[in-house]
Image (cartoon, rainbow, N blue to C red; front, side):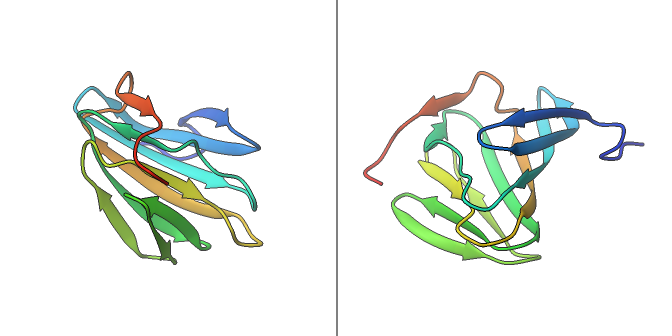
Amino acid sequence: MISKDSAEHYTWGAGCNGWRLVDQPGLSVIHERVPPGAFEVRHFHQQARQFFFVLAGTATLELNGTRETLGPHQGIEISPGAPHQLLNLSNSDIEFLVISQPTTRGDRVVGGGDG
């Protein structure tokens, strides 16, 4: 069994948090929290397929140069090689799950695309 309280915790960017719920070579499940105005660096993954699923708040996800707005209980799949960037353009925290197969460790390439 795992919970946010017992999961490995890490911080990134400007006040962002992540909790590793599953951390295996073939599968990664991370619960993340991103405060207002924070964002991740635009990047892509060479091997990993990802699924972002919003738990709370409103996330903006730029995928292949197009922005999508995701609310609670909405998600989007990202294919390997697709440039993407998650942004919090709202006035409240967003919380979401990032499910990756295989893991994204060592698979992230910064940049990519026109956005």
